[in-house]
Length: 398
Ligand code: AMP
Image (cartoon, rainbow, N blue to C red):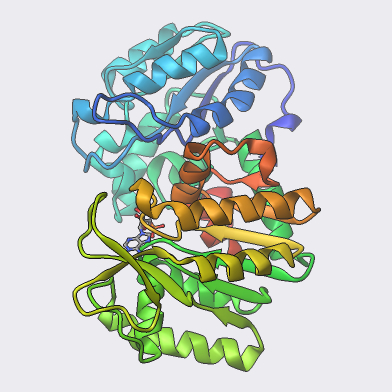
């Protein structure tokens, strides 16, 4: 895909833009982190400045293919309008009658946001023909398509993958920025190259870890996923999170790491709790000796120090996934400590990437600034898929 920089004057043209505006909301429906909306603005402003009529399509949460007011893009429309300094018209549906009517009435310099595209079951359907019907509805409203929703670049969805087959398609500034930064971690990274993997699910991330064994020098594993590896090594993990059917694969992953000479580092100590709750009683224990009635909730101080030292000694660091249950302040210290180590490494000249999702939300919540790291990705799953080096479907690769 070519960049929108190649586009000239767009007066009279309607451009459909797929953005990733999937922001977290609190119980009151207020946006708690507007990073993804902020990151969508440069492309939209550029298209508007070229005289285009802009239609934005995006999703929010997982409404399961049904209209559900709890997942309306209304709060996003309001925030986007504030950031653009222009009104944003919100359609009542996702590429339906109301969208099509409003698209026809749209004037140069105006922005129309379609309702949550995941209100339509076709968006995420496995059936290509079904998805194509929605892609045709979307394409019927526009002359050009711009893909800028990096967070969904690894998905074959109607509004990201299929629609690009129906219209002349370009990539937006955010996608270009993400590709450029992540490519530095994939192609000839400055060494030592350290990957820090946290988060809850081994099954989601194990394939990526195995791929990374070909490029990284060190892999530091923490968070909920570490316990499966610790158990696979014969450790006692008490009530900690575990994926029993992944034990063999975890063992195999560590064997390959050894074979390839990649340092594979697991937590040495843990903060354990007697319940999965914000005010549980806690203790610091050896990571291989979690008491039977306790569960791991965060990494301990020795692990923090060891991980921080390895980060400090790196020239490239990619980090995805929290090191503990950071949503509870008592168990956020490991994640905060690693964010601080990443910041310091950046100041010392390392190239550092925060790999989206919960890690990006965590550094935002801790009050770190964009400039504290080399790159904060807007896509957790997408950045991990990118690092496999197999391309991303929405960018026209594989
Ligand atoms: P993921 O989506 O796989 O990146 O997982 C993110 C989630 O992992 C967050 O909601 C964390 O609360 C959770 N998490 C991190 N560490 C642990 C842990 N030690 N036990 C349980 N969940 C954890």
